[in-house]
Image 1: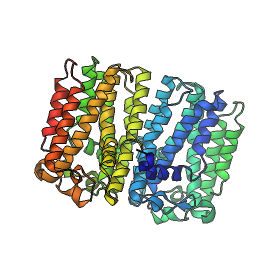
Image 2: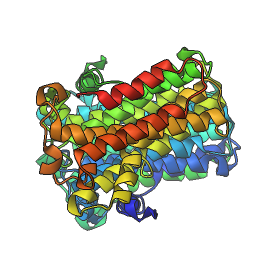
Image 3: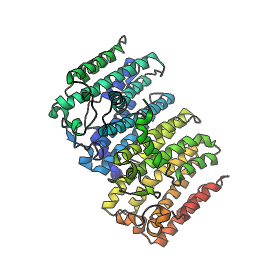
Length: 271
Length: 271
């Protein structure tokens, strides 16, 4: 029987995966593999899997029972095009398939591939990204203190950005207790939090056409954001400090220019 | 910070995992490991992961945008207790966590654990279980021919039952081209299809109190079922033939009694 039976869900998966986006996570994964002397080929399947997990989380985040968003990256959200049920299943399939992609990486040892599966699973499940999404929902009901907001962001956005650096380093053969791994994770942690603060700023000051989504939606959804605790100027200063610290954490490594540029780009972006 | 932040999603995950059910998939996984001389310990993490994937699929299947069911195994469905958003995320977390559980199996080689990750990913994603769910939705819009209905069931229910046998055999060190693997898969394929036919019969003839869900829901949802193509008597005969063939596929193996009993139990069950 032809595969046309599953075309609908495959189309819906591709729609969101190829909808663009900055591919920050994939970039970080590849860049750390290269920084630590690895062959970028070995990081590619990991980078692809991380983007699949990220895309799945966006599709589900946009669903009516979650943030109920109509636009993502300037295009109709997945469920607006394919309907809720297909969007739900397309997200599910992306999450499930991602682990097969990690496990099929032919350029790393079975041991490294397994470590990558474990790391990606932990970073994305209830003690990582999904845990952050739950806290985010709770944050809509009650105002979170800033420490909880930081924890929320370290899970919701940070965990996947950190695991991008981790898997890139792994692909280069770096072990978990290696100083290079710690430096990579510190970089990722710093730019991850700066990224989120910048997101909060853009939700107030940004340009809808550039952002590809309506501004002011955080306030509308009563989301906890950093701007509850500081002015825009203070938030900008905080994001800059985090970015500088992130850049310092990889000082001394030759070939780090693109990671420095990425940190600056994320801080200065308009979308 | 305490883990209480993620308690809500962890509770929702446990609610459905511990809601009971027949644990057929876990049973098959453990039974094939034992049948082929493996240590059952080595199959336990695989069996747990498969039940997590199965539970995640049930939680999402029950959501309003899918089958919109209020009862599952005689209890309120996950979203009826925790709300849609938490149920969605609890399902997501179970799917994501399952692969970590497979990859952390300490009783098999990294090579076998990786093969298990790949097999579970393939069996559950768009060319497996999720592909079957999409076909199932399409089957609600248009009447499927019987060959498509068989294909649908081989994906929606069959793929996960087959991978249960596969992972059990893998845990015993059986390779994919071993005759034992082929026999295990033939058994699983047979009882998987018989299981679904029996499900269709029970949806018409069953006892709501025993089933823990309303009968007649397939007809109400215009689902494609085997009873569109045959009488109840013919369907019972067909399920019996499939069961006998499944039992034959493991003839000659010592210690197969529990798998024979399982096949009969599934055929004769009332719920």
